[in-house]
Amino acid sequence: MDPLAIVLVGAAAVCHALWNLAAKKAADAGAVFVWINSLGSGVIYLPVVAVAAVAYPPRLSWALAGAILVTGVLHVAYSLVLQRGYQRGDLSVVYPLARGTGPLLSVGLAIALFHEKTGVVGLAGAAGVVGGIFVIGFQPGRRDAALAAGIGYGVLTGVFIAAYTVFDAWAVGPLAISPILYDWGNNLVRAALLTPHAWKHRTEIHPIWTKYRGPILTVASIAPAAYILVLFAYRFAPVSLVAPARELSIVVGSVFAWLLLREPQAGRRVAGACLVLAGVVALATAH
Image (cartoon, rainbow, N blue to C red; front, side, top):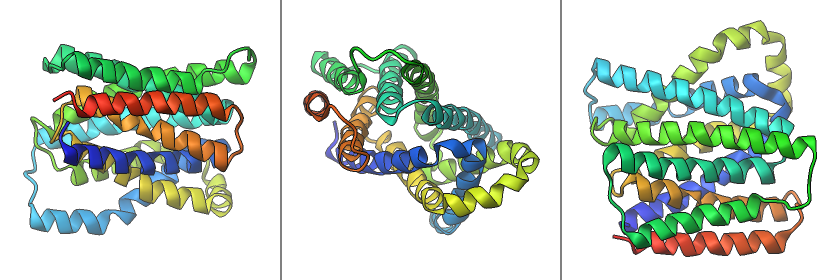
């Protein structure tokens, strides 16, 4: 994998783990929370988009508008399912399963749809990343409603991750759409789609903002940065390698969950993290 792609993916992993911790803290805020942070991202990143548009004027087209609409729909579904998962299940279950299922499906779709080729070492690395994620998230002997909900929502979130990963790689690759403009438009579409819900529940907006101002600002500012870094990485490496490698966020998230949330079973999670790191090393040497 290209060294620049590795740097981009590593930075994105830290950002991704940080905003998911923030989203977990606001788990009970639901769709209104998603609406506020999506709208906030649009406002925060407007100056960045304006500068980028002046430096590199975008080519406006129906393909651009259509791609942004599609990714917005996929991302709003992803965001709502993820937030619901954090409301019903544990971070240590939902997050690893979501991040593990996504790249597993992404690699398969990228190879099937884009005819991307990756050698045995690359596939072994992808397997190591995914396997390590499931070691981190698996909790033997635990049987309860929260676990079942976490597994269900985690896997469903992973399906949406795989869908938007493959679609977005095509949008910033063959369509050559600016990642900054693309993600900004995605946030605006999300905010627009959720506006009817926000209006219906408008009495909840101020209390949620007051209670969760910190998590909202964290997600609104960091989540776009995390994904923009990944979108740029797609320009330097194929989806079948970037999608699994970005799951380094699981390692970072596990450390945060252990140190900040005091979640148990640190030894098992460290073992899983080591497997993930081994997989990433294999991915980095695959090409």
